Length: 106
Image 1 (cartoon, rainbow, N blue to C red):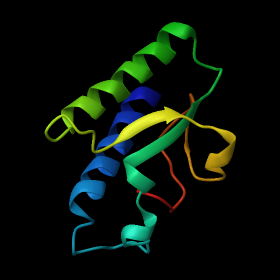
Image 2 (tube, helix red, strand yellow; image 1 turned 135 degrees about the vertical axis):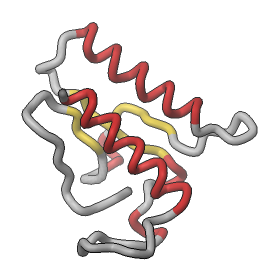
Image 3 (cartoon, helix red, strand yellow; image 1 turned 90 degrees about the vertical axis):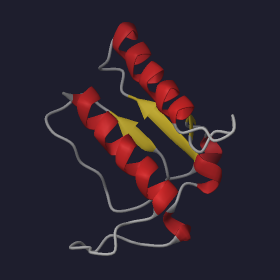
Image 4 (cartoon, rainbow, N blue to C red; image 1 turned 90 degrees about the horizontal axis):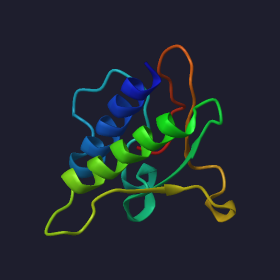
């Protein structure tokens, strides 16, 4: 379930990063270039609740999304493990019930 939710969130992030949010919005989500991932780089952490095989499935899904969104062999989005200098902006992939996100970067 968590992997499906992750993929849905990632696809939404990719679409909004490439095309912006739709004009008809019902939420108070933040809009504008300042909420996009800088240079299309999305830092992430994966919960240790996942075994190595599941972590590899998640990472392979990210690599697939990177390649599917590349334009002229240039990645539009790139996932990489979070480092200390990323600060508070990163995604956390954890095993749980449902999908959720704070309102922040797209």
